[in-house]
Length: 485
Image (cartoon, rainbow, N blue to C red; front, side):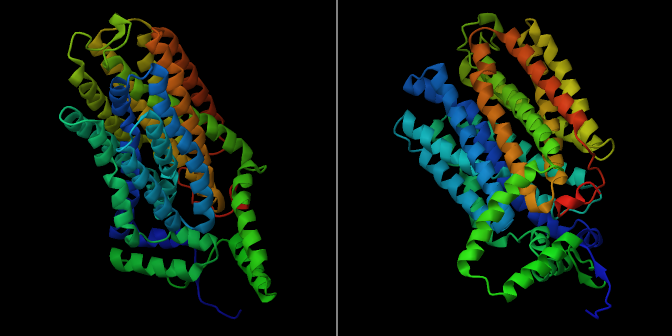
């Protein structure tokens, strides 16, 4: 190897190329994936009460509609993470979009309750691919102001929730829940339509020793952004170069196709077991607690708003707008509290790159505790709506920062698997919330539900403080051995 040309790493290339039009196009495509997920999740607030009335369901059967979606997301998050880490971010998009769009459209034609449960479970499996879109965009962003740009990405989720609340307000008051399901599947079909325009992640390609393919994408990025790559040739991390050399040695020995397939299957499971290695197990377990608490509190705020606004509670004094027609009060309250996500995004954007990821989450969890505490006692409808507005604002902020922190804390070789499994554990929180917390409200135990939320917040604060390191300003790592450096 007598080549004396200078070399540069991927992070150096991204810094030189800066954030430009190319990344904006990647942001638009990945963001569309999050708009789709947000709309399909928010739809649960509206379809549940409508289907319960139409098919005379019990409260448990209504809650099961939400639970099966999160159960599907639990399975999907794990599966898509492994597929993405071993076969590419881009390849996983096609499967994710197909499952979500087809199942979403078929659910509009559900003849009965059981078929609706099955189709919504498949929608949940597709929605489990959300962390893949997040990690994908993250890998195109330069280190500087990465937190701010990731908050911008999270704005697509907020846009999806607000749009879904607006869509429900228009459609449900004029048509019915089937039309709402149909319209809400459009973003997933758009992902299929624009799939051909999505490039592969250059960081994933470098992690797989495909530096030539990564370099071609960086050249396109430089052309579109009207910038220049650093002089020299692109190289991967030392650990990746060692893997490249060992793979070349294996190729020279003409390994059989059976052996290659076996190695591929092993690598799929190894990306999962990497999460429990000595250097990552503490991070993995703390991240699971954090995501569980985040999902429990966020969906709790969303479902509590719809439950207290529905007008069908037996606890008269605890219901918002009990004196109003319940045809519009649900949409009004969910629409208003959906806008709580905007100040949550703004707050997280301001502080995430200034005080760091860990302290940002602690601060917003503490604020959530403060907003929620007055609901231990009976409050007026207006005050209750304002307090739930504040809780959702903070929950949005903590989820935003957590979804930035999760892929940053893992190496490229296990990034989408780690973030996906953490997201899947979070879905368990989403599954438990309607069955436990919302169930307590339905049975007139609002005070006990509030205390339960406060305990979950305290656990989240503790897990945030115990994380081993801060990722603000750190370059993304490609190998486990580089994590502690």
